[in-house]
Length: 41
Image 1 (cartoon, rainbow, N blue to C red):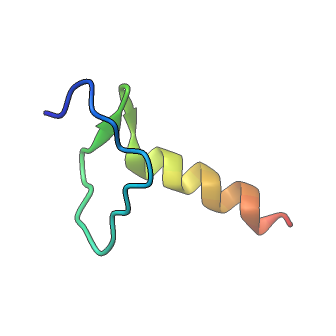
Image 2 (image 1 turned 45 degrees about the horizontal axis):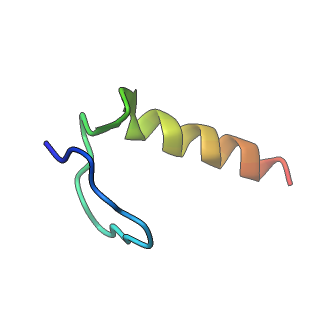
């Protein structure tokens, strides 16, 4: 668990994020919402 971290400009690539959350929100849900929103452009 990372807590009170400054992840400004952090870059994560080619990682298994299964079960990973940010402030209680699944990263997979965040990525899916991002993909859906950007596919409409």
